[in-house]
Amino acid sequence: MKDPDKNKVIAAIIQHIQSSMDVINAAIGDAHTAATHEETQAKSKYDTFALESSYLANGQTKRLAELDEGLQYFKNILPSALSQTISANHLIQLSKNDTPLYVLLAPCGGGIRVDVDDFTVSVITPDSPLGELLLGAHVGDFFDIKAKGQEIEYEVLAFK
Image (cartoon, rainbow, N blue to C red; front, side):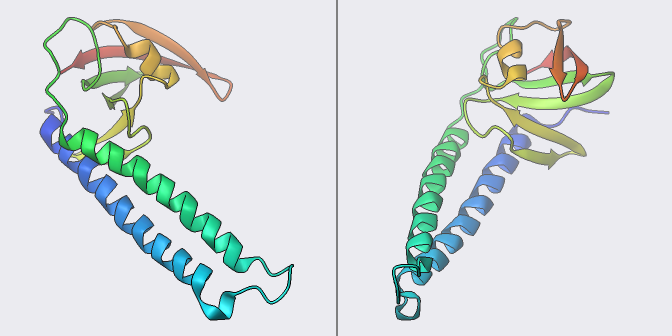
């Protein structure tokens, strides 16, 4: 079976981020409406619905800015330099306890998962435990990470 196409992976990540931004924009509009609508204005000092809605809109606006930063990054991602070691922007094929796994190492977008060419690809950041171990790794390197009380073994099979 062929590896996932890196350009398709990046395009799918961009689409995922844009969809998330659409949802958040709608939520911001709803929260703003709830915070400013005359029926939701406080009728007593204990009525905090409008205030809570404004906090929600503020939090969503911050999340939207983070997503936009990621969107700009992935839209302008540069090809990975040909190297013998793993660095940012590499699409990495791993074996996780003998099960194939694909990850894209990037400085933002951690936690995003996309399906491309019958593969699931996860974005991980260098700040994550696995991302930290992968930076500078070579094909054939092994790593053990303890998660939820279990030892997970990873092997670097390939990267591009």
